[in-house]
Image (cartoon, rainbow, N blue to C red; front, side):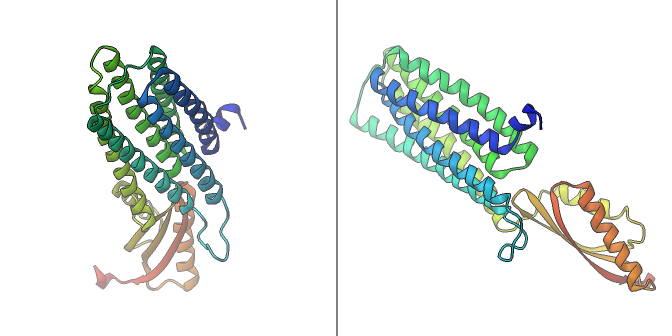
Length: 294
């Protein structure tokens, strides 16, 4: 396996996220403490929560790789989605925390002017998190991992959060310290919206939701390519982690033998499994077809 392919794996992207968040946690906490920035100290709590989320993703990826067993006969794919849901809850909690922290500063009327080191830390965080967002989003899309994609959205939320911190720091240094908490409230709105969207998508998967309409249509069109398939009675798909399960009822000539109808069903199953990497199981039920049905 090449270095690039290792770097593009879900496990590697999660490990890189863990290392980055450890570095940022240290920088934000000590930078905020010595530079006198409440915004950076609050943002360090965000990095601590990010670490918890990263380890949840790591654990979810490990469990999702486990093969099917007697208790989980379709595999453990939804562990990836459960980890993604946990990350979404961390993002939600982060947005609520920033909103309440900002509101508390407004109520208390605190006015602080951080040192310029705080500006450098906030700017470094924004750049690093932006790079991590594009990197993990690419890995999540390529590997179709809900947990890694959620991790990417967490990085995106951190860009918003750190941008709010930078805005507050710069505003304070320019003589407008009252804008610091106002910026925090604005940032919390985007973070909360991001979290709600993630939670909605993950709940759809955990409830056995179907993939997008385009995917379903491509699968049904593929089935029609098989010789001997007279029609399609039903085609149902549900999502398990990053994979799909397909249940079909196809029409075949009523005069075919059981053996011949069985072979057609097998050709349908084999074609779908060969053509679509994200389809992990296909169940085909055969129904007799008659010209009088048209």
